[in-house]
Amino acid sequence: MKLFEHEGKQIFSQWGIPIPRGGAVQDIHDARWVAGQTGYPVVVKSQVLRGGRGKAGGVKFASGEAELDAGVKELLAMRLAGEPVETVLVEEKLNIASEFYMGVTLDPKNQLPLLMVSAQGGMDIEQVAKEFPHQVFKAHLHPLQKPGLHSMLDLLLKTGLRGKELVRAATVLLKLVHCYFDNNAITAEINPLVIDAEGNVIAADAKVEIDDNALFRVKAVAHFTRKEEVADPLEAEAKSMDISYVGLGGGNIGLIAGGAGLGMASMDMIAAHGGRPANFLDLGGDATMEKTARALRIVLKAPGVQGVLINLFGGINNCEQMAKGISQVVDDLKPSQAVVVKMRGHSQEEGWTILADKKIPVIKMGTTEEAVLLLLQEMNRQGVTVDGCTD
Ligand code: GDP
Ligand code: MN
Image 1 (cartoon, protein in one colour):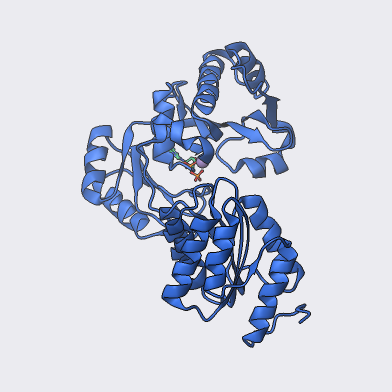
Image 2 (tube, helix red, strand yellow; image 1 turned 180 degrees about the horizontal axis):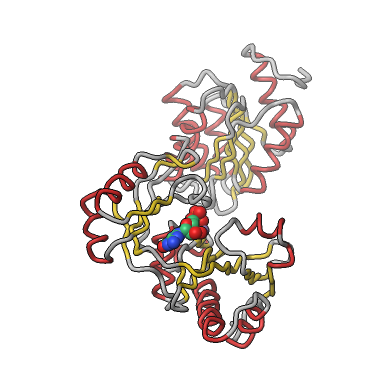
């Protein structure tokens, strides 16, 4: 999960990294209140998840209330790369003497945390790396061992920092590393790290991304809510039943598989015979009659689906229960689409009998390829032409 700047700064602050005074607001009234607390001049920053806001006009300065009103109004009406601005961060304007970059990110090449610092702060670090490759200093971190202050000092010495600014920046960098590890971050970046006229070192921006797989245990982000953005309503319906469904858009063959591996193999086999999988669906290990029925209803609802392949294995799951779910839906909906089942395993005889009673074609001891070919044949009988069908 990517964090908004104000969320990242909240976490930075909890880990002891100095941030400007201010607050995130959603209207002019609250913006005025925050500015009243910090005093003018202030900076008003659009809260969107993409970077480069400065260049895109998403950061404004205000020396008084009239400018603040205008800035907040303008930003809240803006979209940055399609993302509407719903929140702005109002903060005391820093008196910038110099801008540095510091970040920790997961290096995909060797799967190690990578520390990067530069005296060329403020601009996009990818651009700095391209234009001034010798001014980005890097060090890999041990994945299990937090480093000490001395290694932060060693790295930052290369940027030219000296004296109390060096020590302050190294302390911030060490805190950033701790923040990165403690919160299971993939990226934790300060750009710019501002050194102000008095030599204070402050995080003027925050870019933090938390590993989605670790979100459940990262307490610091538990209260950051997000609107569910599920583009496909069928995915949302599947999710509510704990079914992992991914709509692929434009396919003609719906798929229900017992296991992710079997699902992927089935998709390959469908494609190998000229069909196009409309979805990926893994029924999982708790496939009750209800869950199987719901999965079939979802798959049949996807636009463009002309046939459904159900490829199941009864291990933990029970073939009889799954067959009952399938036959219930076929009874209810009387789908115009062809449905072919391959099912084997625990309680297979009972399952096959239920399917045979409903005249649902079933592959008993055959292969996935045979099931795909049978489905294509059935679809052909219904007048659907699929390339590669050898009927
Ligand atoms: P980004 O463009 O999305 O990375 O947004 P930043 O938060 O990094 O802001 C862009 C630029 O605005 C920074 O590099 C600074 O030069 C400037 N800026 C941001 N906050 C302040 C501030 O408090 N005071 C001053 N003088 N400049 C600021
Ligand atoms: Mn920035």
